[in-house]
Length: 452
Image (cartoon, rainbow, N blue to C red; front, side, top):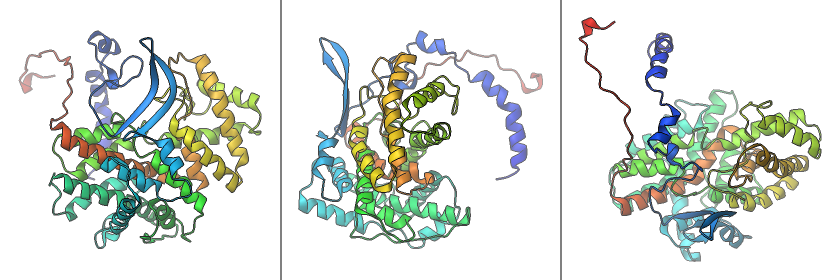
């Protein structure tokens, strides 16, 4: 990439100019009534659109006031709790949820089987794509690798720019189908070329669910238990969609509104999701848990746990940011319904894996942390664990490497992105263009020879 050293030195010298000219004083946001991050002072998102795809409930109206309540997440009007409960002793809850979000209604048995066949048939990449694209430039950043692959796939599609809904739907289904391959193969390439590990390129089995195929392709022996596949299947369903306002979904709608193609819109969403403020929360939870384990010898000792969590909260321990990761959510108040649903599966997997002590530690943190946060911070809507509090723990128990934690989020969330892209194309028809208040003052031009 050219002379990197000279570019580094130049950038270091010029950084002060950016610091001087790009700073915006915080009080100006209030003066001009600007909602930073498109949120109001209580953290609620500013209304910027309408959607039929999902609904998040965290408050109820009572005598004209908003009262915090247990969270609820609806996919096309259906409670995710009911979707999970209804799928017990059956497979393919992810595929059923994907059908629901894409088409707006629950499939009957025949429709679900047809959709499963289409997903299976679409688990195929262009000839030599794995060798020529995925393995060509392996990286520890699997999200970057996936983004590159998605953009490159556009070159293999002779209908890339066609925005007819049937074509966009076809592109979306194909991307949903191969996302596990893009992620797992990218990891194996990195593990082989960068970490000197063995490389396994297992083809997906058309008779398996997407969750089963992920485990099959990841593991050297291609083996997994029914419980492992079920827990991953549920995890993917719960991460599939979360309203139009989350950063990556909003990014999808913004890019879609410009008239761009599917591959560009999904690549942009991937770039958003990989940000540590968005898709990497479960990684921070795992790092925090590892740190707590180094300082707490007994996972049942609530007094010691409370003491150490208080130190984390007061910026005296762990990363000294004052955050207990996995606690609280931008939207939910008393509870995150995804966490409530997921916890039962987490506990079952912990028993099967002999991780009872770890489960006890998580349970104690879940019990103690909200009380400490409520005492130390002014929280108007309550604090509860979110789904990311447990997802990293589950992935660890499944033997999934940390490099694939955020890609797994993408494997699930592409369904929601696709549904919102299609809705934006059908209903919006107007480019998203928010306004920014300019703070620029007119300057007198100086000829170049007169500038100091």
